[in-house]
Length: 397
Ligand code: NAD
Ligand code: MG
Image (cartoon, rainbow, N blue to C red):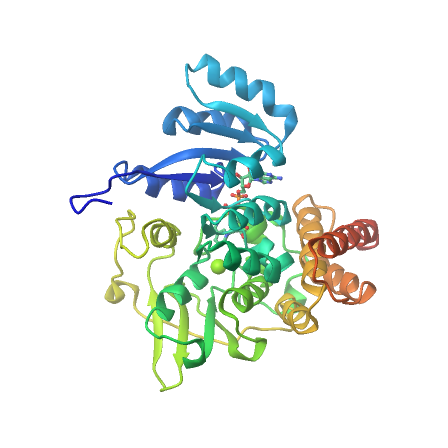
């Protein structure tokens, strides 16, 4: 890198490009054409949306995970006169992130479907901007080990963990940390009692008060499973046990996390609820770059409030902590059952309270076993999906 500027442009692969995080990542990348270029764009099944992004960002490669979209993608790229190469399938994606097509990877596929490409990026030693929290929940030890041995730098793109990442840069050793506190908005149903949650609809559940996000994480925020997944995520990212990981409900969503150190200092990171800040940290670190997000006007926002989470109304947070403590396959089972339950809830097949019930039943039916291989974890994931899917009928409203 020359003193005058950047001798080379960093090539970024954006996985989950058509999603909410994908859009935020592409927004920040497009603000810095002298530093970054989106060289790989990947999506699940929305060919038209992916083509639209290709016309705008002109990547070298476009990948559609669903093989049925291959021809439409290839023909659409050709019709648009783009040099972008069309690929289909998850294996193609894994090969692209591991190869020479990119320097950094924004892992923003939703769910366990993101694990193979996340792992491939880590094994290839890429800088990994990790939004796909489910891959850490499912295979956190393996993923962290792969990143360490390949020298892959992980920058968490979850607002809370990105906040912790920033705060931790003020100490040298992990032993200096007394505890980490993740904040939670409380979701759209904060303040409701359990008895008031039976009839809530998918539309109400995805209407998040502070963050605009994809449907799955929005439901996870409404059940507080999102915070449970994040406690497990923090455990892997920062090497802290359950007891050192606190959760505080903070409805304003301006304080993203706090880190308390052994000397009694607590550092917090604050900012508007806009994921472009976390993505700018991930793209630019250790430099600070423009993200398009305005600064914080605390006078305009008024009060910052904090309260304890209600584990009776939102038992998913408790279930997630239990699975973290149980270890082995338990977090994989929790995550898989939750993905099945959330998808069923979004389709109207089960009610809101059936989400924790289904997760709890699945955890009880498939007790934790040790899991030190990817095969064992994927087997637990598959077993939990099968069990939860077959059980759904019993929860039909
Ligand atoms: P989203 O639903 O908006 O987007 C998901 C993306 O994943 C889409 O581009 C979709 O095409 C792609 N996808 C889905 N299934 C796929 C598959 N099988 N193969 C390949 N691609 C597939 O979701 P989102 O809100 O952007 O969230 C993405 C991830 O980031 C999730 O893990 C979520 O928990 C995490 N995250 C999101 C936010 C947020 O603000 N949205 C914040 C923190 C963490
Ligand atoms: Mg978060």
